[in-house]
Image (cartoon, rainbow, N blue to C red; front, side):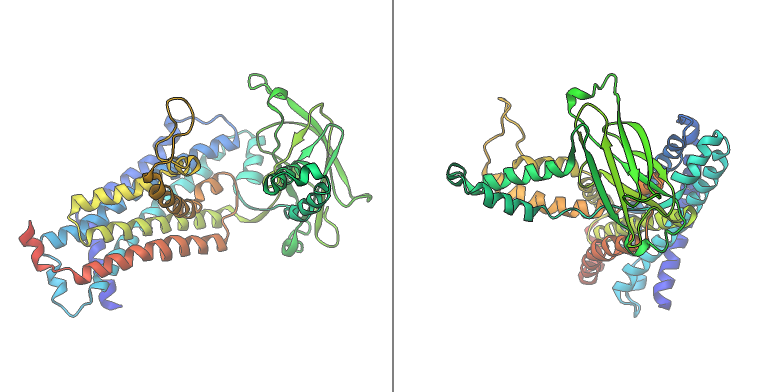
Length: 462
């Protein structure tokens, strides 16, 4: 460990010597102070956090990520090109320690920079929040600067209903002569629609099992987060309307049940508080919605209704969010060092940026996978005929898309700006996926290449 930490310390000192730390610190602090001055919020709690948290942390992450790639590629590639690494290579120090020591040094710098910039963001957030109106300060305290977890209703098992209806339909000789897969698909769509759609005057019931959180939620107020859709003809985009409905929460047929009549807009999320202890002795919270509008309303099974509760405080949640960002920096450092293990500095930087671009091109890759071709749409407006290239490219794009979705699924900024909890399990998952899985892949590749590379020939090749 002594040699490993020594190499990490030398890497960190080199960054200070080249004034990278001072320049990066000034940029990061400047971003925190300048962005709220350039972009004005709308005076609401959510608009305020959108500027302070979302935009600022996004720019900080991008700037720190670029600096990490530059330093990771430069610190190893230049030492190899200038034969400085031979001073270490001739000593009884394994090359994996050289590689890992540089990674630890870069991560030490990233930790320092995140602490500085994160502390400035947090301090600015608390300072600027005092300028909000009292009502918005209350919203900020209860709905944004918190760490709320969510519980949804367990999705119903629709397959049993589908098979039951299928058996009934197949008794009809005309339906029995049709394609079995197509009939099953139509029945499944009908069952799902019956679960989601609430016609005018009808009632939709959710029974959310709070499970292990029941004891923790005793005496704690909860929030309902709902979203629904209506037919396009029922909601004009120029003049959106509110759709009336009656919400009833609490154990059915008891005096604890509370009601709330409210008109809500479609195609957007709404949150409203409910009193504490409205769940029954089994920890089940019953929510009924009666549609009082003239049109049918659709609540998606996945995101129609969610029960939110405070899981922890914002400072701890903010720290966990910064830790997830640090995991991303660890992946970028491993990517840059792996490229620098066998490439010159400019080529390693170009290759790293190329891989990074692919990771952020999920939309394009997803479109190729959905269309089943890389040729897009033909001039006539229809899909192109799949080519031999598609037979190879589309499966490869599917594999790349799975990797992209796995990595991009761990993003803390949206959770912080919306008051959602970043749990310890999510942080552990980010560490496992980003650092151990993907970062470990690049680390093994970089260490393996560096261990087999003939360092003495690097200067001769220049």
